[in-house]
Length: 161
Image (cartoon, rainbow, N blue to C red):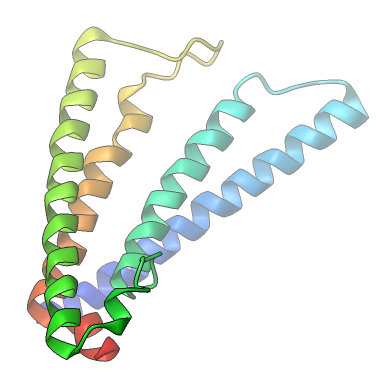
């Protein structure tokens, strides 16, 4: 049941990241054509391209974390015996979980603060900043789920040993 839910969420995450990257590409393409062919610029395009890329990066990072393909400094860890490698894998998961929870909490505070104060972007679009900031608590939650998944299912830990 839990694995089915995780599998379904993986697909949703991948599709959302793909849609956001595609959206950023399309907006970039439209902006380039508009500027160079029609001497016109969409005042909001650059802002949304940045937001789309940031959101897709965090969603993609969750997928990378799930597959344990993130950058790791393992030169010295790989020289250790099996128990030493296991210790550092567990330490990595524990520290990652702490970081993820901190990201989730500080992200929530950032979103709440921007929402309460009504902060918007400085561009003409006047996008409420709590909307793009939402990726912080979302990413913290996703990373926490991924680390908990690693903690209980230990897929990446078993594969590396």
